[in-house]
Length: 150
Image (cartoon, rainbow, N blue to C red; front, side, top):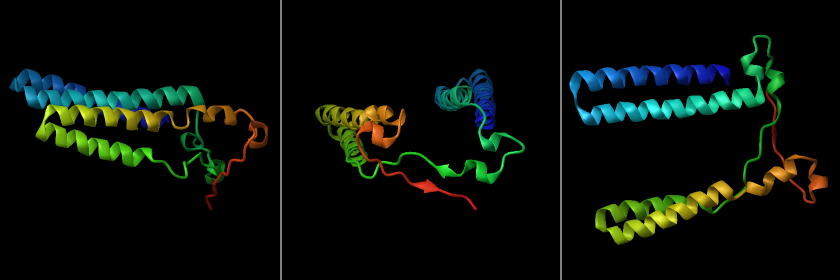
C-alpha cells in the first residue's frame, strides 16, 4: 500500500496547489470549494493507505521479488447477505425527496440514513473475536472462500 499512498499523496498535493492557485487567481468560490474538497478526499485516502501500510507492512505487490503465488489464499470475509445496503439506498432516496418536498421528509430520510449507515458499520463489529482463533475455538462454523491465482 506504500505505492498507493504515495500516488494519492501526489494527487492531494496537486489538488491542494490547484485550489490555492485557482482561489487566488480567480476569486471564484464554487470552483475553489470543489478543488478544496478534491484535496481533502485525496488526503483522506492517502492517510488511510499510509496507516494501513504502517500497520500491516509490505504486501507481496510492494516487493520487487514478490510472486503471484504469495498473494494466494483466503481473501477476506464477504458477508453472504445483508439488509443494510438496500436500507441505506432507500434512505438516501427518501432524503433526496425530502430536499425537494420538505424539511419533514428530509429529517425522516436523514434518520433512516443514519440507521442504515450504523447498521452497515456495526453489523459485524463483534466478528474480530472470531479472528483471534480458529472457527472451532470461537464456537461457530465460518465458511471461508479462498481464491487462488494461477
